[in-house]
Length: 606
Picture 1 (cartoon, rainbow, N blue to C red):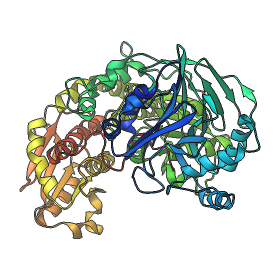
Picture 2: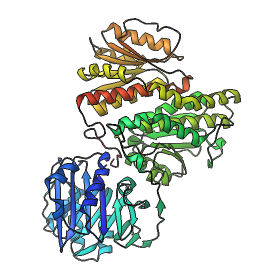
Picture 3: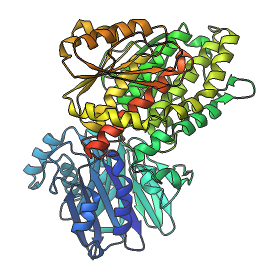
Picture 4: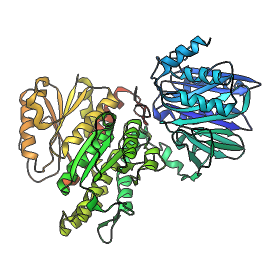
C-alpha cells in the first residue's frame, strides 16, 4: 500500500524521486520522505501529510546526491508523523519498506540487547538495525541474505548504505517491487506506474529475490544469494491514461471512460461478425471442471458475488465465493475438478495473492481476472483474463469493477456454450446484447443533474441502506461501499428480502434508502420490500430501468431510470447512478475524492 522509489544515476536524483512519489500518491498514504547519499553521509527529509508538504517545507536543492530512495507511507505500526515516516536510518543504513514485519517485537528486543537504539514506533526500523548488525560480520550480499531470512512477514525494500555509496538494494517477499532500466541510471519502484515517466523497460522481482542496482548495472539474486537471470519486459507508453485531462478528478474521468473500456473489453473477447466469444488458450477441457470458486476482496469480492449469480443462471456448475482474507485460514478441501478464479484490479492484493499461493501449493487450476497483466497474481496463475481497462488511478474502483464483471460474465457465457448448457439461439442473442452494452452505458451516464440534487440528502443523514434482490444484490453492496469509501457516510447493502429479519429496526423517518428494482423477475417482490421501508418513513431513491409500464408503488422520494437491456446486463447499468451518487456526495463535502482517507489503491498488506 505504501509506495517505494529508488534511483541510482550519474546526476542528482531528488527532483526525480519527488516526481515519482507524486505518481505513487494514488496508492494511499499519510506521510512521505526521501533519503540521498552525498559526500559520505545519508541525508534524510521526512514529513507528515502529502508529498506537496514535503516539497514545500524543505529546500530540495540542498538535498544533493546521485543515489536516493523515497517513500509514501500508509501507517500500520505507529501513528502518521514525521518520526514514523520512511526512510528509517541508522548511522550507515537507510531503508524504505512496504509490508509488515510480523516478528518485529522479538527482533527489536534482540537488537536492543545488542546496543541498538530505536527512534520510531515502526516495525520497519527493525530492518535498519538488523542489516546494520549483520554488516558488522558479513559482506553485503551475505548480510542481505541473512537479514531477509530473519524477517517474518511481507516486504518490499529499498536500501542504501553510507559505506557503499554506489548502489541500492531491492528485496521482495509478498509485496510487489519492480526494477526499471534507463540510460546511465536504473530504478526501483513499487509498481511500473511510478517508473513509467522514466522508462518502459521493467523487470519484476519474484518472492524471495533481491537485487543490487547501480547506475549502469542490475544484478539479481535468489533467496540463497545465488545470481539469477531475469526477463526485461517492455511496457506500453500511453501516458494519456495517467492524466486527468479536463476532469476535476481521476474518478470522474474513469466513470466517464466506462463506455470505451467496456467496448475495448468486448472487442478483445467477442468476434462481432460471428457473434462468438473467443477465449484463446484456455488450458483445461471444460469437462474437467465441475465447480468454480471465486476469490476477491472489497470491490473485487462484489464482482465475484455478481459472477456467482451469472454462473448459476447460465451453467450447471457448482459455484462458491470467498473473501480472500478468510480463505487461507480455513480448512479448505481442495478438489482437482475445481477452478479457482482470483479477481484483483492491481493483481497485487496481498490477501488474494496469499490465497492463490495456497492453491498453487496444492496444484489447483487457477485463473486470474486482473487489470495489470505484469502483476504478481497474473504471473503466478495458470491462465489470465485481462480486463483491458487501462490505468485506474482513483482509489475507489469504478471502471475496473465494470471490467471485472464484464469478463466474468463473458467467461460464464462461454462456459455455458462449451458445456452445451445454453441453446445456440439464446447464446447468440446474449452475445449481441453484450455488443450493445457500451452505448447503453453511455446513455445511462447522462444523469448528473438528478444525482447532484439527490446527493445532499445522503450527506445529511446519519446512515443509509442499499437494497437489491438477485442480480441487483451485489450492486447494492457495491453502491454502499462506494458511499462509505468516498463520503465517509455509514451505508449498508442488504438483500431486499432481509429487511424484515432485523435491519428494518434501523429505518427511521427521513432515512435515505436506495432500492435497486429493475423490471426483472424479482421486480414485484422488491417493490413489496420497498413499500415496507417507505411505511417506516424512509426516503426511497428507486433505481430501475426504462419501461412503458408504470411503477407499481406510491410515495417514492426520487426515481432514476437507466436504459433497458436483458436481465443479465442490467447490473452494469444500475452501477452507474451509484458511482455518481458517491462521487457527488464526496464532492459536495469537499473531500479528497481520488485519495479517500485511510485507504489505498493497491492493498499489499494482509
